[in-house]
Image 1 (cartoon, helix red, strand yellow):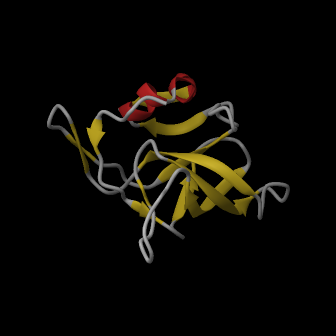
Image 2: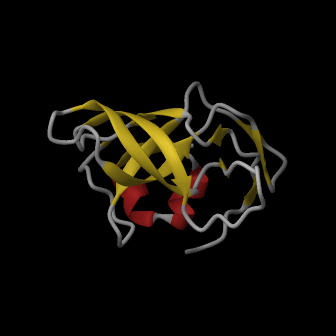
Length: 132
């Protein structure tokens, strides 16, 4: 995976509720763990734009509920700074379900996607409506 070209402050922590923004059947997700997190005792993992994490489906289709899925965060409420000096923040936290090969599960994404996602996950940016 390519490195993120922004100094992002993580806006989502362990057990946060995140909106699922694709048409995979899940509506609401609860963050369980960050992929690749190595921390110390009592330190909670924090997730920013472009980070991959595991989540549990809270609301959605009955076949999807209570399943553990792999996701990537595409929007975050907390403001972060790009290398150009621009500061970016969105109205809500949103994620997209992905497979083990980092391909999106759904066939369309409803909202906007951060530019950092387009660099790191090109397949997600192709099905997104717009990239900011």
